[in-house]
Length: 78
Image 1 (cartoon, helix red, strand yellow):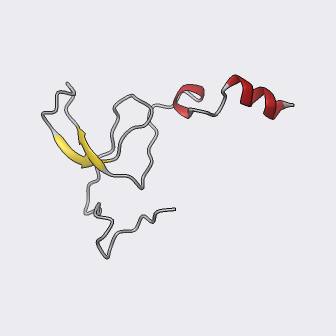
Image 2 (cartoon, rainbow, N blue to C red):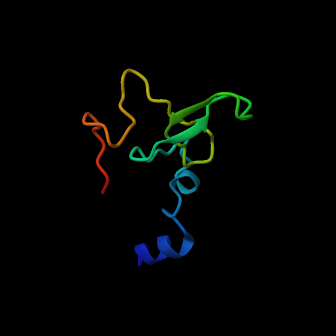
Image 3 (cartoon, one colour):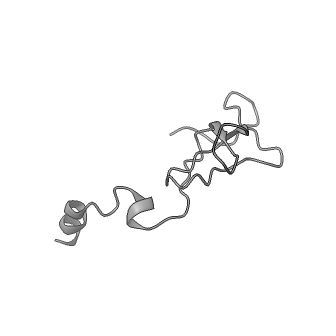
């Protein structure tokens, strides 16, 4: 019964809305994103999108390999 109520109310469909997340990342997907505070395409860099819609994109630092074809790439696709 509880599962049916949660499903019908939409709970869990979008964690950023139902759980009030500040940020939500899918670490296996890198893309070119705007890291400027104005969001005016003035600071485009390779990063991980914040799926919550709050534009708290993740910028990889410290030698993280973002090329999925590189031998040292640690993230694996499902």
